[in-house]
Image (tube, rainbow, N blue to C red):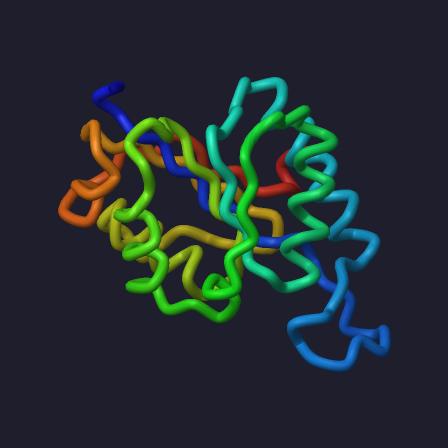
Length: 166
């Protein structure tokens, strides 16, 4: 069992507010959101970010972001769509993290604001990270168990903003 755990918090791509989508849960990605997810996925592939497990909110825009990341990054990994990640509170996300199996060394969570920024701030001890759409925040924990993450501080591995990839 490795003595580190890596977590990548990924905010969904830019969504389209102009289409008739019914409920917020069913709001799709905008063209820009699709392009940004593709760029971010290509960058994750170049930097060899390969999660062992991806947890994704059930919202349409997060699932569409996931699909584009999987394609662009070449991820071959286990994926779970988690209803409870839609509009989740930070504590809900942290509870979910701490219950993951320890054979998962690298975990990615695709979700929403404000929990993406709030969870990162909790682990990094900073409230100043910018979290635009399609942002990726990568963190490393010096622990061999996800159950121990709740009490840990993390080291920032990546703070990727899609506009920096242009």
